[in-house]
Each structure stands twice: as structure tokens, then as C-alpha cells.
Length: 474
Image (cartoon, rainbow, N blue to C red; front, side, top):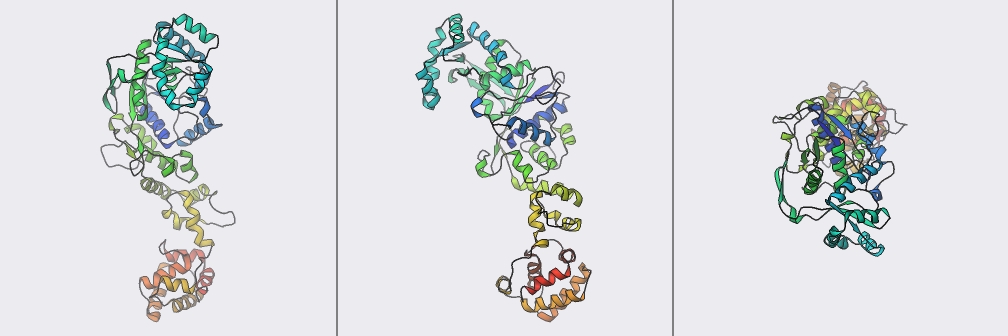
């Protein structure tokens, strides 16, 4: 049973670029857990890795989160909250205070580097790996003297002194009980040479000061958890509950990466994926109720979400399922709504009417598909008698085209019954029947082998334009 008093969670992205779909899932699960348990959700920006910062990334992340419908109770973009600042680079003095406390108690130690050694560490990964063992010699420095040297500007980093024996057992809300052997863990850097804290230090200090009760984050941080638990113990702070989410995987079960498809939420927004569809899909990446329900509104998710239904193994990002969900949400929109959402995808010179959209909307997996689906209305397919004959060698193409032109010149107000009568007449006169008749007729008019109701398409396109297209194969 969860104690619902003072439930506080945080989503803490780094402004190093776009918001990853995995980040959106983390934000969503934090949000759903908070709302289900009458808690608060805090947005915190973790920008201590100054070398990797990307201009405007904070604004873009907040913009995407606002688009998603995930609501925060505190954060840098809100005037509410008393636990700020909510951007880590604005909290440097806070980290310094706690770092000095650790050094004075002997739970951390300052390591001094010459300019030459600092250059080697910054330029060589292998050098960084051996630095931890080399730096243990600085454990014997008198804390007061070391602090004075650091204050006087000597090159240095600060390391957390990890236990040298024993184990820590962690009961993760998703992964279950996990054991870590302290002797296998190096002393991590908690303050870098530029004076900024590492993730290990800053996130613990901030989670304590912001009274975070539950930490829901990606499983890539699970190996770092012993360091974080040790920090809590050094300060005698209450340890929050941890839940590490499974990795998102490509369909070949490798870690989701941009090399195999879009991973930025912005990419999906740009392509016209609906907010409700993307949130529905993201929610099901590793979580599901015990039933077979596939469609959820955000309101429903807030009522039924629980961590005990989150799987511990990786979740496959199935683009086909996302397209299927998105298609469902698009079909439920009116033609007017689709036209409004599609403005940036449709050429301005095209005079699109609601009838056209209504006819093709069930074919839309995403809003950006609309141009391809509407193209046959505005651009005649590049077909010739030769190309159609090659495609349909068993069809009497010339006679089919001649008789279609005659019927189109004679009949207006095309509908299903009328088209069926016309096709029956042409079948009798040409000997071309079934798919040997219907498919070439559709292909000559639309350039497609399959599609929406052909009589409706002819009616919307107009008899004169259809006649022109049949003349192209004569």
C-alpha cells in the first residue's frame, strides 16, 4: 500500500538536444503515478554537463511537454513551487555546501591534478579509467588543508569515498531485489574540475531538497544506484522509492536508436501523429492492464496506471502499432479538423474540400500522409496505353477507355449503382471482367491499384477530368 501523503516525483531531462520518446515515457509514467496517488510532479532541468548543452533545448523540451498534456506542479516555467531553483546550474552554491560537508566528514576527498595530468584526463578515456585508483592517494589529505588548496584555485575534482566491502541490496519497485558488491564500484567523481556537480551528486542533493518520494527513471541508471544510496546514507537522509523502467527497443530488440528510426518526440509531432495516439502508444510501452484494452484517454490512464503492471524486460517500439493507433484517432476526427491539422502538408493551390478528406481519411496513418492520398485529385497519374497494357496484359485497355469515355459523357452524378451498371455494360462489350476491368479503370483514373470507393472518387474528381485521363491511354 502506498502512503499517499507527500507523494512527490520529478522528471529531470538534460537540455542536450531533443526530447527522446523514452524521456516522454518517463515523464508520462511519473505524471500518471503522481496523479493516481494525489501527488505532485516537478520539472527539473539537469544542465550540469555544460559541454553538451544545446541552445534553446530547455524551451523546446518544455514546449513538447506542454504539447503532450503532461502537467507539472512545479518547475522553471511555472511561478508555483518553493523548492527551486529548478535548473541545476542555478544551484551550484547548494551543491558546494553539501560537498564541503562530505569532505569535512571524510566521506569525500579532493583530488589535485597538475595542468598536464588534467589535459591527459580530459583527452584520454583510458586515462580516466585508471584515474580512480590513482586518486585514492588523496584520501589521506587533511580535509581542511585540501579545502584551502581547492579554494586557492588548484585544479581538482572531488570523489565520493565508497565502502570497500559489503553489499547493498535494493528493492526496486519494478526490477525487484537487486544486490551490488561495493568492492566492484570505483569512487565516483561528484564535483568536476569545472566546479559543476556530476549527475550522481546533483540528483541526490536535489531529490532530497525537493522532497522527492519516488524516483521513476530509465534502467540505464540502475548500475549507479549503489552510489546514490551511499550518498543518502552519508547524509542520513531518507532514501526515496526507486523504479527503473525497462529499455525501449527496436524491433530487432537492440536499444532504440536514431539509426533505425525517429527517436525525437518532435519528429512524430512534425509528421502529424496525434497527441492522444502518441500518449496512448507510449503508455503501453512496458505497461498494460490485465485486460486487452488498447485505447486509453489520458483521463483513463490517470485512474488505472500502476507500477506493479510495468514489465521488467525491454519494450519494443512497434511503429506499425503506433500507426494503427494513430489511424484510429484520425478516423474519429471530422474532415474539417483534419483539413485544419493538415494545412502545412497540403499545397496552397490545391482546393481541397471536405468530401475529398472524408473519402481518404481512413487511409491516413499520420496527418502527413494526406498529400499523397489527395494527390490523385489534383495531379493526373503518368500513365500511357503502353504502361497500362504492360501492367494489365489480359485487359482490353483501348476498348475499356473508349466505353468509359462514352458513359462519362452521357452520365452525371456518379454513384455506386450507376458505376456498377456501367462496368457491367463494359464487361459485356469488351470481355474484360472482374479485376481485369476494375483494376485498370482505377489505375487510369487514380494511379493506384487499391483505394477508396471509386464511384465517390469519380464524383469528386468530375467527369471532365476523368475523360481527360482516359484519353491519355488512347
